[in-house]
Length: 538
Image 1 (cartoon, rainbow, N blue to C red):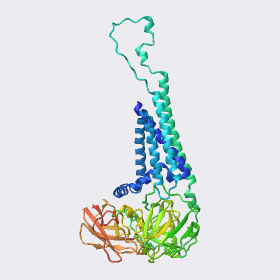
Image 2 (cartoon, one colour):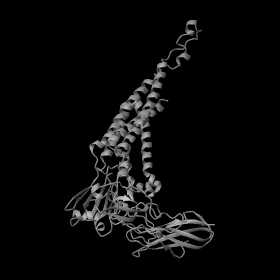
Image 3 (cartoon, rainbow, N blue to C red):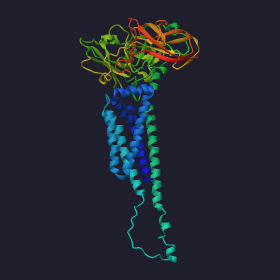
Image 4 (tube, rainbow, N blue to C red):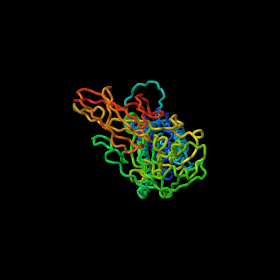
């Protein structure tokens, strides 16, 4: 009973500590909350294979799984700390203090962090230590006194007298708990429950206050994006075959994949946002959001892909971006000879490096402010992000962009390069089968096979399909909307016979290079191999 109460007291102290941290984070920013700060540091320290496993296994829910794991671990450690505090109160308080310092270190380890960012973790540690001390004091007060009996010589039994029959020495009466002890136990339970309730309310209240204080959604809704100086025509209807189950040619914003390291979305006020272009330039630039909107805006239809995408995976999407010309701004700044890398810095501390030569080679690279006709969603980089066709997102697409450094590859290694990923990040040729779905049951006879292929900034020249390792058959390609976009395709499998069959696909880019059959994992430069599905013909 006492061990359980002590563990509950530890958990209550942890709830109070986290609640206090959330309240302070309502002032310092949601990203400084202790659980978020520790989780962000954990992401940075996680080995690349484990990160890839998390993305592969949990997909876009990897962050929720991480936070859930952090909270579960916190609860278990808190229960142990409560048990420890019942025996050694100062040791238990010290554990909470140590976790407060750990959280402060995690907050300060983030790029651009200031001393104030450590405040939520320090407050959390202090509240946790004081709370566990108070609850452990109540626990000790409620503990039954230890019984000590001295050995006595055996005596002959005597008949009870009238006076002793009703005395307080009756053993049955001695076993009844004292009223004060019972009251103390109720006080422990009440104090533990009240602490959990107050801590939870503080946490929820802090989160609500933070949401109101940093209401980026309202700020985004107030933004009015000007039209492009020369709007692009809409893609022709023939870019997508009319095959049920085939993905849309243009990906809706709500369905566009999100893979990043941000546990909480950066909340940026566009009225206070500014972008610096600095480094190896003759004329450093400082642009406000209004300055950016007054630039001649351009549109770009582009298929963006994540390097973590497995063969046949879902982490690719096509959208129409709108933004200012990145090459034009760099030329205005005056890039110095010898510079060969452009490093984007995100509000959340992410750094992404792009080959500068590719940015300036004539491709349409943007500082994007809109996506599919509306201001960038917060999850996709509001108020500004970079987009450079031909590269995976980890070397071209800095979300929540705040700085652009013109530098060299020799002078600086961005975030993912420091973790072993390929420095360039050029998109590999990929193709996938979307119809029929894996393990689908299809009728015998003619079967429609359909899917999507991409080789960003090179374009797709051909797609081929084969069944059960037989001869390759050319697929019918939909209208080509440009080399920066994926291309959809269909193929008729004639004479499908009953049984289980394997369908494979491969693509050829516009330069004549055929997609390799060799299977490779996403790390370090993108997955390779032919996508296949197994179906049953009935």
